[in-house]
Image (cartoon, rainbow, N blue to C red; front, side, top):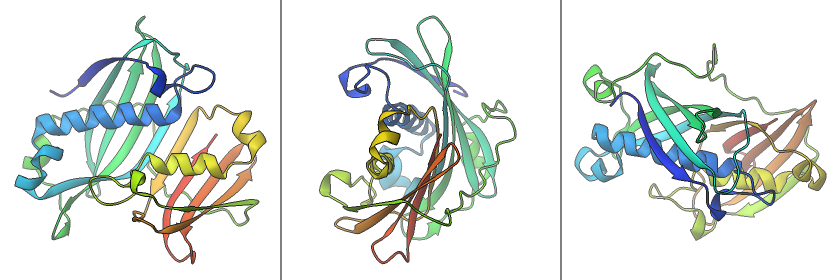
Length: 240
């Protein structure tokens, strides 16, 4: 059970206007295969009522090597890399039907108890995932993304019912939607953003008003999502 994999076919919901696999769908495939692994390990969504434990996503890093297209048959693969400083690490790969590696990704997660908060990871708990040592990125240590000093664009948004997930917060993938909305039109149209980093801090809640601040630093595009009064940091997204 160390390496988990599943095959999918790219459909209309997975592609952009160029008939290519979009970045949000990449994260969705990663989310699905990771959730399946947790189900097998006994710490998935269906186990929350019994364990009172839930995984919280802290960080994504994704690199697109080759952009897949509508109708492609793909294999999505994931595995757990163990824990670092009370957080679990999980990696991902996506292959096309010819066995070519097209996308790689890594993520960092924390385990929380519904009533008690952050849970200390134990060998007994993590052993259910049969951790592997393989890493898709060399020497990546999940350093915190820093807020830029200046911004050139601000997009405002109110969290809607369609955004809310099982934890009663805005779903993790929807932060990427907000990041795209904050981009200037020419930046959005002229970039595929084959590299993504998303750092999550505080979950946004239903009807909360958000401000999304955009800044470009050389070839990197930053979107910082905060509360309306700018006192709460929800997420920082880096696209390049």
